[in-house]
Length: 413
Ligand code: GLV
Ligand code: MN
Ligand code: MN
Image (cartoon, rainbow, N blue to C red):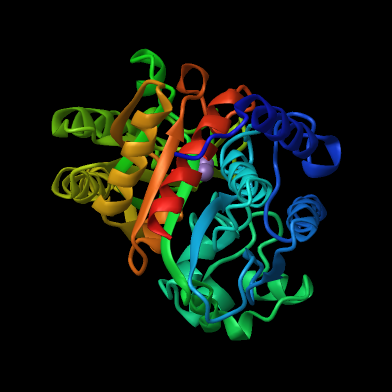
């Protein structure tokens, strides 16, 4: 069992988080907001690069900007650790970044305790979809779960509508070589991602550590309803084709369907775009997103199917037309029993309260696990609040996670 100075690790983790919450690492005062190819994101990568180089790691980036740092030459086996350091547009300090900071702490501990574990840290590009509306983009590129057309044409910047490809090139990357990103995984014998839980199971059960054995699957889709734009004052109620009513019907039906499906199924309409979006005009069209998830594939996939059919029928019933397009679907990911067990052993050895659990949120590990035996470690976040500036977590729990991960890799690597 690796013995670490938990207090010292907690202090270092708190300092990293404090630094990366500073004004030069977020594009706004109101939240942590950083995403691919912004100067704030670049500075975040530079911070990790500097820290890792000072530990003697070789640091590089894949063709689109996923950060890779390793302490062994190419061709030698390494154990993977990391997460993402981009944020939700309305994000907090911990989602993703705490996982990369904790991975960095594992690298520090490995060298200062003289363990010299073979390690490769990865910080994935665009996990949150904050730049291009595409969650897990860096890891999906790595696992070839996108097409060239997606990158060249379909995936467009939320800020300016220009393509991902154009932005990547402008930032100095080589998106034309995106298929080579898979080689980042070539030497990995295993992968562990640490993350805040983003729910309140750990807090409510008074556990400090969650060992994750599965990650919920999801469907991301868009519904566009075409109505008829008109005057809000002069148009009688019975002569309207108002697409916002289909949105309203669908929101209520989604709540009903997800609740009825049970088994952890959840559904959210998170983006709403009303065109033209004026107080005195009936909208001509509405676009809204669907985020439907759960730990049981049949359950959330069933809801996704039914809600799409419902929205189209609701539009027709009201004399309008709606279409549903899927952005992406990712099945429930089961994690590796051997790595989960090693983590459980070291959690037990730590003497601190822990439990085995599944993740409701999505993670890059869903992609990595396709090729590499993978698992995750969760730490509590206050009241489960996440994807919000109020997000809060305890660096002492992250230090404990670092100890457990270090011990597990010691057994496995
Ligand atoms: C990832 O950030 C998610 O929304 O699960
Ligand atoms: Mn995250
Ligand atoms: Mn997130």
